[in-house]
Image (tube, rainbow, N blue to C red; front, top):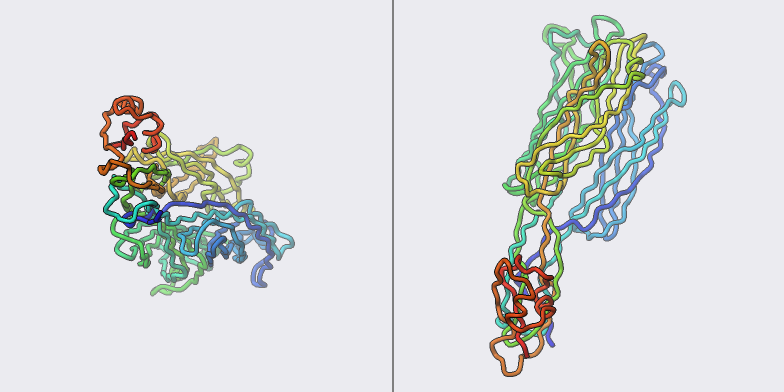
Length: 510
């Protein structure tokens, strides 16, 4: 009996692996000689980024870098910020091939930094790695027992699915001059610069993506008017870049993830000879996750003229109809009294990061939960700080109610403030969400079918096409044609109800 693969169907892209891994990072850092001794560590601004990745048959080897900015109060009561990096590498076992589409995401957990001596700090961190692998799955049925395609009759369906692609570009350099407004004091030295992506827009085109990002943050600097006094100046920078993405189309739905690092600052004078110009230089990486809706034809019923056979079915789960959803919601939380009692002066700097974000869809809304880690630096006898974790839960309406899965999302906080109403302290922030949603679907397709020899005395075939009505079940059709119900179920891969089938095959009695 001849075995044959029928050429006429295609393949889909589907997620076949999702895994977690943890890597421990331990390092020590000694302050350079030009920094004063550490009196008290106020806050640690940290970031983790991927620096390399290699995919083999059964594993992903990756390299990363933890960047830390240690904001501390010196022995001389000055505000200082020292920066250092810690590199790490690890691997995660996967189920995939060399040409699979892979995405690796790092999340720092349990990061602690303490002063071993007035000039040395110790960093310990656990880096959680989340890995997704998408691969091609063939849906071409295997057909046995026939040698000519002309003998095969089939009913097909169009399967919609989202093809995922990931493209990256690293080490993009930016130089920007920031002018200090006349209503702010002049700059003696820059203590620390905070820059975070606020909003990223990605527009797909054939083979490339146009990325525009608004970066927001603040420059913390020591003023030239009063020695030891600091000022915080808000900054906003817009950067644009074109990334080459082979699978990108005009219809692609995208999320852009930006990582900013290696920020350096220098103070220069303006045309009037005043120190009111800050030269910023930094690097940033772009990672784009895009989803494009595609269709492929697959058989859900098949028969051969003059031959009898029963198919084996398989269920394919995939995502379709990608949709981009952006939104934001406010978080307002009253702080604990024991935290508020520590604030003894005016708040100079307030910043926050989103941690442990998760996403779900409920009742036509995207539900986002997580924790906002907020740090407030205030002026007392020297500088000091408080750190609070504010849990949040927010909802964003989804216009298309058929969407039931969050494929990927980016969550960040902005406009962080701590306010005092005369009795209590409150933490206020805005949570911004950028996500790609999809509709998760199941399709039944023929995996294989084996046809027997021609039926004796019957050249017209061994199946009859029947179009059921919405209220007919297997038993009704079986009674009408005098065929056992189990035979009809096996021939069509169905259970009791058949209303979802446009047409079914009725095996003939022999």
